[in-house]
Image (cartoon, rainbow, N blue to C red; front, side, top):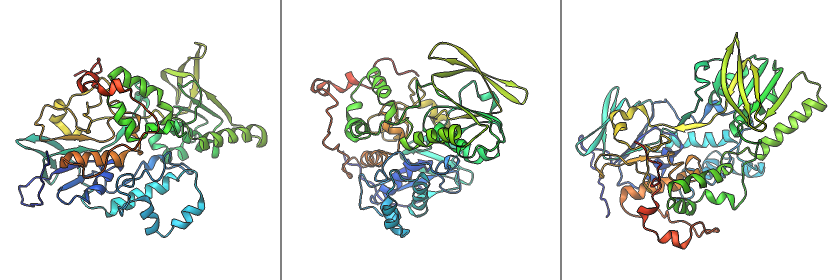
Length: 452
């Protein structure tokens, strides 16, 4: 069924779509909606301007996906908001090409995103949504100085830094998440630093500390993984970042999804080869070429059991999963490169009680990225970057955000405005038998994942 939207701007006419949060995902959606004038949309952000992970913009950090997987190109390559358009607008396309980057500097991509946010229509910064309720046939969004009504909502607030329970009592100037690394590392003045987390974020922190050791005497990098492993960035592995893989993944049962997610973890959460080489070569130089007082130790297979305060320092009790031993680490500062978790924004208020969550605390998503909730089906709640378990590992990455935005637009319109059909797959993911099964028998949460 096709849904007809109008551009009536009467005072009491609700928006067709309101967005909570302006990160890359909702920014992508706003860009695509410029080509759909019949949809009245507006996106709201409490911050004064767009700023993409400023605390992680350390020197030399790189994007782990192609610049062609930008806000729009995979579904609307003629858009004025592509990364190539940004380069042309700033008169540095040829310079960028001549630089021959193996991976785009993350700082460059952040500037691209900020440039788009300054120009695209329908964005409202410095506007914090205090509360959302559902009334009659619409959502009511309340701000400090007014309100806005909308028929549909899209949540694009992103993921929040995850801090393990053992570290929460000690958060402060000398114990912090890596999302604050850029502003905090230079002022630490700590002699002993422990970095927790063996993924790309942890690697970037370690790389920065090794590049400018300052007063550091001991640097220990621990990871729960069995080694400091590279991202699996090969062609067949990268097929998981494709619409055809998502289509196949959606047909799996709950346990099958968990297994597929585990098997593909290093396509997303591994270290870039350049980071690995940089760290290893720096360790080599400090050990053999540049006499240094810095003692650096890399310790995989470690799991923190407990953290204690030891005067002005910390003591970490760690289990060595390789041989079962218990170790004690001493630190003056602890950096937590422990990842991110999706959480519904507090602004949803009473709506949160009407949204069904899985056992991981993520909203249950339908195939079209709408949340399952107890309200009218005509008033939809979309969620961006919340489908890691329901839609696969690519959902928390930049790779498919344009395709996901196109899917959301098509759902709003009730027709295929954008071509979101998968390409011809190089790999055959699903068996013909599974493809023929009734959808209800292969529902993503049909075998125990659901909990109220």
